Amino acid sequence: MNDTTPTNNADNAAASPTPPEIDPSRDQASEATHFGYENVSGREKVSRVMGVFSSVASQYDLMNDLMSAGMHRLWKRRMISLAAIGAGSRVLDVAAGSGDIAIGLANKMGPSGRVVLTDLNGPMLAEGARRVIDAGLLPGRADCIQADGTRLAFADNSFDCVTIAFGIRNFLDIEAGLAEFYRILKPGGQFMCLEFSRPIIAPLESLYNSYSFNIIPLIGEKVTGDRDSYQYLVESIRRFPDQKRFAKLIDKAGFELVKYDNMSAGIVALHRGYKI
Ligand SMILES: C[S@@+](CC[C@H](N)C(=O)[O-])C[C@H]1O[C@@H](n2cnc3c(N)ncnc32)[C@H](O)[C@@H]1O
Image 1 (spheres, rainbow, N blue to C red):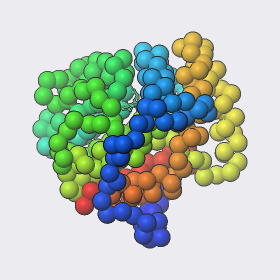
Image 2: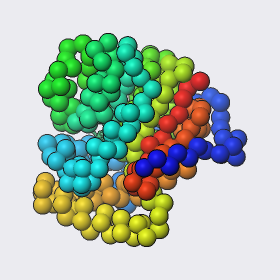
Image 3: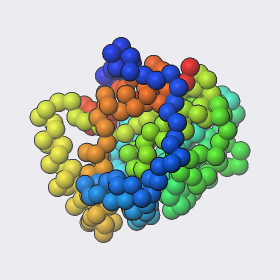
Image 4: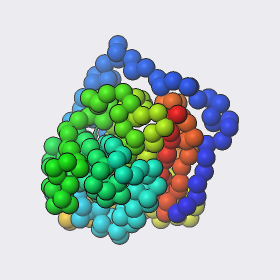
C-alpha cells in the first residue's frame, strides 16, 4: 500500500513551470468526448455524469462499502493521514460527494481549521452537508458549495491544501481542473488526488477486470436498481490515465515534487504535488 514512486527526471523535464491557459475559443460543450465507452458531446457527458450521481446519491456510501469490501475507508484514511495540514489550515475538498474526506480532514485540523466541500451534483452535496452537520462541523468549520471543479469561484492562493477523491475522472476537462487547483492553492500548498488507477501485478489485472465488469454492475443493479451507472463507473476507470500519465498531467499543470503512492497494488493511486 506504500509504493511511493516519484516521477523521474525525464518526466519532469517536460514540465511547464506555469499552469496551462484555458483556451476561451474552445466550445467544449459541443466537442466530442466520451462517457464511459460511448462517444458523446461535452454537454451530454456533463448531463449524464450528473444523472449517474443523482441516481446513486442516496445509496452511495453503502455501495462504496459493498463494491470495495470496505477498502475505500482505508484508501481515504491514508489520504487524510498524508495531508499536510494542521490547526488553522484552510482546505478545499473538490467533488466531495458524501463528505468522508472533508470530515476526516476537519477532524485532523481541529476546531481552528476550515474545510470547504464543493460538488457539482446537488443530491451528492446534500448527502455531504447532512454528514457534515451530523459530524458537528456546522457552523464555522465547514462550508458546502455547489460548483464545477473546473471553474471555482475562489481567489488565487486561497487554500493550504486541495483534495479530490474519485472525482476527477468524471470531469469534462481534467487539465482545466488541475489548472484551477493550482491557481487557488497558496504557494507551498499541497494538492492530493485519490483515484482509481491500474493494477501493477499482471495476474491481479484479469481478476480485477472480471470483478469490475461482471460483479460491480450486478451489485449496482441489485442494490440501487441502476446497472448503467455502475457500468459507467467501471468504464470511466478504464478511460482515466494510468499512474504515470496522470502524474505527467499534474506536473504539466505547474505542480512540483509530483509523486504517487499505489494502494491495493495500483487499483487506486494517491497522487501528490505542491505549488512552490
Ligand atoms: C465517485 S464520487 C466521489 C465522492 C467523494 N469524493 C468520495 O470519495 O466518496 C464523484 C463525485 O464527483 C462529483 N463530480 C463529477 N463531476 C464533477 C465536476 N465537474 N465538478 C465537481 N464535482 C463533480 C460527483 O457529483 C460525485 O459526487
